[in-house]
Image (cartoon, rainbow over all chains, first blue to last red):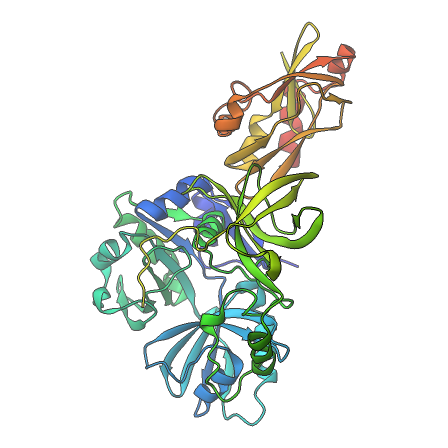
Amino acid sequence: MELKKTPLWSEHKRLGAKLVEFGGWEMPLQYTSIIEEHRSVREKAGIFDVSHMGEILIEDVDSVPFVDNLITNSISKLKNGEICYSPMCYENATIVDDLLAYKFSDTKVLLVVNASNTDKDYEWIKSQKRHYRVKIENVSNNYAQIAFQGPTAEKILKKVSGVDLSKISFYTFTTGQINGINCIVSRTGYTGEDGFELYFDPIAAIAMWRKLIEIGNNDVKPCGLGARDTLRFEACYMLYGNDIDDTTTPLEAGLGWAVDFTKSSFNGKEVLERQKEKGVTKRLRGLEIDGGIARHGYEIFSEDQKVGHITSGTKSPTLNRSLALGYVDVDHSKTGNNLSVDIHGKKIKATVIKTPFYRGSVKSK
Amino acid sequence: MKKYLKTHEWAELKGKIATIGISNHAQNQLGDVVYVNLPDVGKTVKAGEMLCSVESVKSASDVYAPLSGKVVEVNKALETTPELINKSAEGDGWIAKIEASNPKEFDALLDKTAYDKFVDETR
């Protein structure tokens, strides 16, 4: 199958990016070095092409109750112009995908989903329509998406912004012009830093990309998926397919804060209520590794007993420590517990530590 | 004179002692190296067998032994500065020294021209 290309593909080529396959897309892994790009976002700013993300539009009178039934977090409690992060579960409470829900109005909600899951999500969402009066449309091709992230993101973006960025608080959005282009502008991101995500007509993608780099006067670095992964990892944001999937529930992943049990019903509610009452059997935890790098799938031990597996791991570029996330049987998951990870056949000491590993300039609600 | 393996390691032989590392092309493909799993001194390997591994931000890569023999020294500097491999893969970023049990194996390795050609063809 031919790989899909974002409207910025030729620009990535021109910049000499190393391109890799990701979820059916040919995407930039890095332009210069993952660590350099990572540091740029932590210290100044970075720009990411995230046009591969999927957008699914829900419209018509039942949009809010429909989405409320679909996701674990609450859309009815949001005001227009607010966003929530949420897992979307199957009936058995395992996770179809995690997404952002943008509430435009009671009759319009935009779901932003993972690139690799877009088709699966679209089919799943359509299958949940039942009696709801909603129109469901996969509008992924209508949008280019750029993430503009870092402690100086606002200061730089202000130079070409037709909207007052200071009025966009964390997890809210507005529509207006950036660089003369109509955009959805939200204060969201996947890096642990302050920043914005822009959705706009793909035809303007290259002009927008170049302009946002130009106005940074060398403070804005193009960043690839490599840095996107290490940045989100330090902030302990979930990566679908690694940390969460259709074998894990939001409570096991520590996403209970994004589950609204006060809603009358939603997919997975019964199972999650039982899990909450009885307690989960495994929990996603942070681990500090004593040497070497623990990667996805590596096994976690307590003495000789297998007690879990790693879901993500690397050497944190900011903290310069080897860290990992992994599911650990709840009896062994207390902070400070000494465990080990099998790395290339050797058992390496691993200590359960608190998450997130790092908190940057990201705002809070 | 350095010689190369198709798996992107290099070796340089002085007497019976072969210095071993990964090629500049390999470090470029790997990206930022963050950890080197150095082999134990005293370990014996056969040519083509896994010697150790190098970890970049994104992935772990096996390093194969270009020659058979015993590991007599490892580059301790890589323990604290693994990025030496990115800066100087075929110099200060060497990984280990092996006392070759059959130095003739060196002759069978690719010379620089042949290796560069191989890399070009597989690009």
